[in-house]
Amino acid sequence: MNTLLLVLHILICLALIGIVLIQGGKGAEVGAAFGAGGSNTIFGASGGQSFLSKMTTGVAVIFMLTSLALAIFWSQPGATSIMPEHVSPISAPAAMPVLDTPPAPPAEDTK
Image 1 (spheres, rainbow, N blue to C red):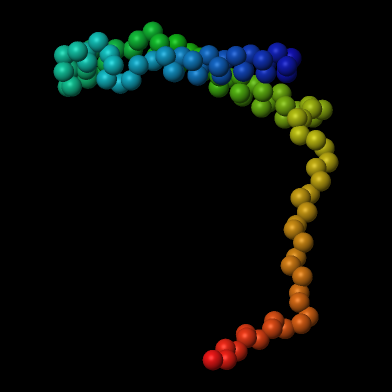
Image 2 (image 1 turned 30 degrees about the vertical axis):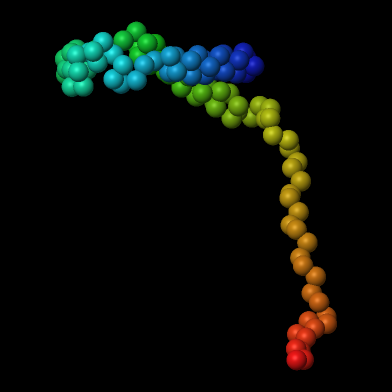
């Protein structure tokens, strides 16, 4: 069940990315041909909702539901994780060695 839901979630994710990418910008609608201010008022105050924006909303809702379902299924006891059980801690870098001898004095100039 988890595998099927995960595959569906990934497909929905790719579909959502594709739908958003093929949509035009805010000014690329039919009303943009009538001038800069015409694109906001051609369909009224609320604007027209195209098929792609309705599809985006639907796919986004399905994406949220599959995300929630995956979170619920994987939070139950006995669910497997993609993370290993025992992760070795990252060791700290070795400290710089302390020199016992003092640094050499600067050379004197003899002119």
